[in-house]
Structure formats: C-alpha cells, structure tokens
Image (cartoon, rainbow, N blue to C red; front, side, top):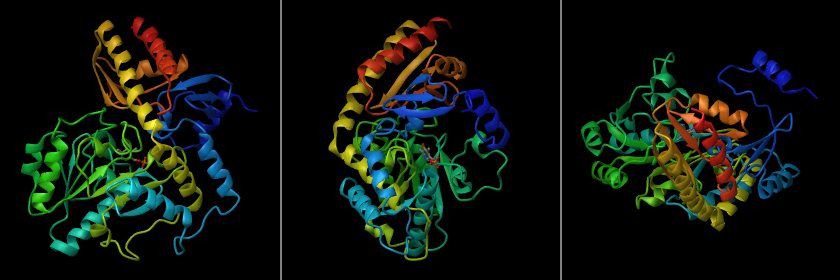
Length: 397
Ligand SMILES: *Cc1c(COP(=O)(O)O)cnc(C)c1O
C-alpha cells in the first residue's frame, strides 16, 4: 500500500485544488478518533466540520447502510421511497415542519429554500417582491445563489455577476433589519448561530424580534441549521432554544451523521408553492442515504446524545475558560452545546497545524476563532486530552 507521502503527491497531481489540505491521509475512524494511513491516531474535534455528530462509523448508521445497500441503492423520485417517507415523518414530528424536500448538501437545501420563498412570494404578492435579507459574515454554501447570499469577499471574489436580490445586514442588529425591509422584501435568511463566521451567537431576543418583523411584514423566515442543527447546540434544532419557529429550515451536515444528505423543512402553507415539476434532485432522499438518516435521527431523538451535547459543551467551555485565564492571547470562549469557539487575539492557523502534528484535529474559522465541534458522544476524558494538547501548544507561544 502507498504511504502518506505517495497519496499526498497523487492527490496534489489530480484532485482539484479547491482546498488547502493538511498532510493527513485519512484511513478509518471510530468514535471521536480518526486514524491515518500510517496508523497514527487523531482526536477529532472537527468531526468532518460538524458532520460526524454521532462519532465515526456509528454502528447503527453502518448497519443501516449495509442492510439498505443489499436491498436497493437508488430509485428515481418518480416513485415513492419508504426510507425517505419515514425520514420526512420523523423530521416533521420533531420540528415545526409539515413537509420536507430532500437533496444532497447544505447549499442545495438553501437553494431549495431560496426558490421556495421567491415562488411563494410571486404566487401571493406579485412579481416585484423577491429580495432576501441575509447577515454579514453568513455562510450558506458555495453555489452561485448561496455565495450571492453572503457578502463575504473571500467567498464571492471572482465569480460575478452574482445573483441579484440580496440585502445584507450586520448579524444581531434588529434595527438594521427594520431599515433593510422594503416593499421588495420576501424573506429573511439567518443562521441561528453563525458557524463559519466565527461561532457568533446573536443577542438574547434577536431571533424573536426577527420573527415579529417577519409576521408584521408577511415575510418568510429561513433558518439555515445546516451546521447548528441535529443536536450540535444541545437541542435537536437550534431554533428550539429561542422559542421561535422559522417558516423554512435547511439541514444537511449531520442529518445522516456522515453520509451526504440535505433537507429543506417547511410548513404546508408554503410547501404548496413548489408543486410537481418546480424543483427536484436525482439523488435527493435516495433510499441508501435516507436509511442512514433515519438511523441517525433515531439516535438523536432518543435524547442521550443531546444531553451529552449539553453537559460536555458546558465542560468543554469551562476547561477552555481555564486556558483563557492562563493565556492573554485568548480573548473569549463562547458557544452553545458542543458548538464552541475560542476567539484569539492572534491568528489561529499555526495552532491548528501544530495540533495536527500532536494528534488533535481542530480548525480555525474567520482567522482568529478556534472552532471545537467534536462528535456529540465525546467524553470528559477526551475533552481533558484535547485540553492537555492545546495547553501544551499555548505554553510554547
Ligand atoms: C456547511 C454549511 C453550508 C453548506 O453546506 P454544503 O453541504 O457544504 O453545501 C450551508 N450553511 C451552513 C450554515 C453551513 O455550515
């Protein structure tokens, strides 16, 4: 078998260079641990960027995939698919939603949401009401529509002309939304907690106030829960912390806790805007991936991982706050459940590289925010191990 360096060279030669990759060649995973091709083990506090919420190779997911793989891999959405129906029922039973559109990624879920709100608005308010208000430093995906939905220079640069019809406001500023709403506005799209933007939690009352503005102005509220959904913040969906419900919610990342699947959840009233032939996806809600998502949802709904997300989130933040008191370059620790960020006064890139060398996977977002999104099954012992490695790195800075 090839060693790491061979794989890295082959990858650099023929795989598109859209990622600056670290020198780790992934081989296998179990729980919170990833093993590379040379047998080195890494404590995984990135979890595929909040995808492996049940840890690597959760036995229920593996079994669901194995069972379904031998029965039916794919079937067109021209026909009814039991696994997809079961998943839709589970998502509706445990959320505000009545109907679910399935796709394969977060960006696609957001595309579906954007199409839905425009079509609903056209059907109900006429053709001059298409603008969508989104937040600065938001992240909604990498397609043309979803990059148009963020104003982040580093994401949009070079791909213009972008899709028109977006207005940007500072995240957490309700007055800015009031000012931005016009006769052209049809929807507001927000992450309940910004992920890529730096684990930004809005001020208390913000999401409720946005909901009220939507109600007063007959606007649809879209919550992008692609990163924060499925137990990450300690509840099944992040909006459940705030006592507000969106009209549309998008999911992907952890929905099948590994395998790729996305979903847009909405209310009956709005879902009717997307009738037969208006939208679709060949693989969306495919039996194999839907079976995996049903297995993942069963574990999320059972509740133990949600509880662990709360207790381990508290523990992780407490331990990180202890580091904050020790090191002056740690500005703030923030988060909810196991969605945790540590803001530094210095760039975090080198810390991430050193951590990798020492067997710890974390990442740095928005330049100076170390992000910790471990599997929701993480233990105190694993948090302690992570802190020990981080402490060792901080000591040398
Ligand atoms: C990751 C992410 C997306 C994009 O998901 P993809 O599956 O990469 O298309 C969209 N929104 C948020 C909040 C995300 O974190």
